Image (cartoon, rainbow, N blue to C red; front, side, top):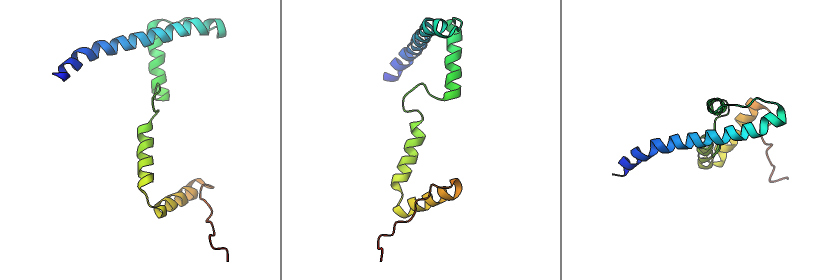
Length: 109
């Protein structure tokens, strides 16, 4: 029953969100950019095109900004033993130069 409500509510909600967000961006653009920088005013459809292009070029409109990949790397890093972490640091240093940490001499005798 819950899936039926989601199927009924989701499409109009998505359309409403896209319309409201597009209108907001269009009005902000037309209010700020023509007087400040001399840009032309844009239409709603041009606004959606700009938003789509920015999504393609820059990835995200907010949120965690690709945190899924980052959190998987962090989880993998935290599951490594100290020896595995050091080997990884050394391989980074060999590939990238300058990232390998110097060994600390704990017994200076």
